[in-house]
Image (tube, rainbow, N blue to C red; front, top):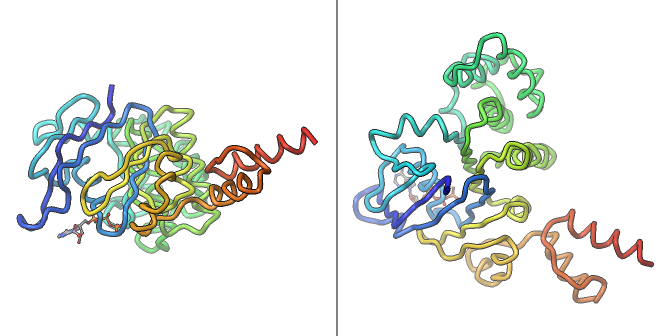
Length: 275
Ligand SMILES: Nc1ncnc2c1ncn2[C@@H]1O[C@H](COP(=O)(O)OP(=O)(O)OP(=O)(O)O)[C@@H](O)[C@H]1O
């Protein structure tokens, strides 16, 4: 079954200019998908439509096989979690701990299990020392960490990350990406991540490329990165690991292009063991 099925979606904020035009894609359950595109290409608009914050002008959205509409939106929201780029409007609790607890209460998690979950997720995002802090007084990156902790606590079936690690330092981004990978591989959650981070794109399973509100490319990361010139015309770069890999192939050191650092290292280690 598809976790998300979008068919012929069009949307306009002002009733005149279409910011999404006839967008269609399907994301199977358990798939880690990334959406990329230049600024203003419509990525966040798709995220808002997928959680029913706005209704499409045309087209349909199915979540877990059920049509998303006014009647189903509240029920479906139990299955879909989202972390926005700027989580300011997402905080409800007066402390970090209260905020995470609020989501758990909504998902009927027994009181006696809450403290353990709160501490576990806060530790996983590096915010254990901030449980009594006011979310609004944290830095941008710390707010993003707390918002991600809230999602890790409830683990909804479908999780949408809308540039939700954009304010994190490189180490923070890597460790949160690791948590996202774990949610996907160990818990089989469907992940839809809107990102400008091509290293993250390389780690996903399926990529959707948006340009001016239209889907222009879909496929595996390597299929997408094969369109290097087209990506460059949309201000999108290929990952650094793929650039290194292309050089290694050109120099005949390796014979297959790969796009993650891990794969490059594996290839080099294998070479060393054959010398
Ligand atoms: N609330 C709004 N009212 C009117 N127009 C909007 C609104 N939000 C977004 N837009 C317009 O819709 C288009 C798509 O915006 P959207 O935020 O979906 O793009 P995006 O791909 O997420 O961009 P970015 O990478 O910069 O976050 C843009 O032209 C933007 O100006």
